[in-house]
Length: 360
Ligand SMILES: C[S@@+](CC[C@H](N)C(=O)[O-])C[C@H]1O[C@@H](n2cnc3c(N)ncnc32)[C@H](O)[C@@H]1O
Image 1 (cartoon, rainbow, N blue to C red):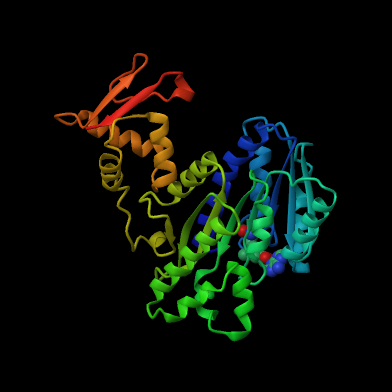
Image 2 (cartoon, helix red, strand yellow):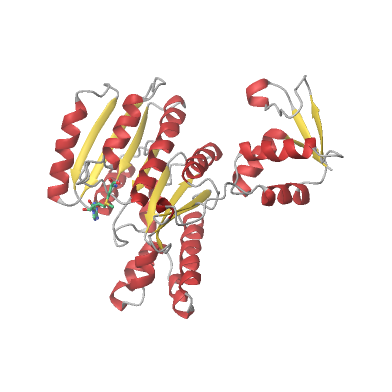
């Protein structure tokens, strides 16, 4: 298993640890986790594959997960599928009764389309689902299917978007319709006019992100880039959600892997050949003090602004506020409806207090 695959699994594990309790405690009876390109369940070096990681996260969660969690594993290659079934068999007896497992040796698009058609025909709705779409290539993940998955506003997607291969194969005429379906538009062909590879990859990644928003109806789409030994992009891991809480948890998972906040992991970094500087909070300070210098802001609203509009997290906001409060003269004015300690900014949800901040 390559280091960037480990990084991908660490992100998945971290996010599922948050997603299962968030959704299972909402008023839903059943949630669905679909690993749509499931793989064999175990790698040659004995590392766990994504289906086993997901089952173990749900099984070992310290909180009680009250609803039914349905795991649906899809794998098209029969030898890998057989191995997966055998791996599942080895842990099945350890799983609580509310975890249900379905598995199918099938193609993702065919299988999910059939299921969605069935749900639609019976006038039912898809349960809130997290769909992990982790192909080797790009030919079986049409935007129209992602749009149907996201028609349940509580559903989410985690997609491996193969930037390098898409760039490499884009000029093959026989793949034009595949790319049209992948992006849900033919605008990807504008990449032909770009001579610089990193510019093309940025363009393709950004086009995919905007299509997730425009066509699939995703409110918040963020990507984390995986790079090879030469620091060249291999793929981007896209997360799509309509929930600010989901976005916050995924960004938290991304920051655990890349403490610089660049949202990237390089196989080169692992060898200590590349950069690791820690996070630079100066851009956040600039955004806050220049864009929000218009009166008092509730701290909870600042949290939301930071999560939705910047790459940072609320913990970074706290750091910037502490620095500004401690400077001479102070760079912020703080009002709170109860007593608070200096350098602490109580959130209403946690404390019942209203804390307002003014950037001076
Ligand atoms: C990148 S691997 C998945 C790895 C796995 N998600 C993990 O992290 O352990 C992609 C898998 O998808 C399978 N596959 C390829 N095309 C597929 C399709 N159209 N539908 C379902 N599975 C497919 C491949 O055989 C392969 O095992």
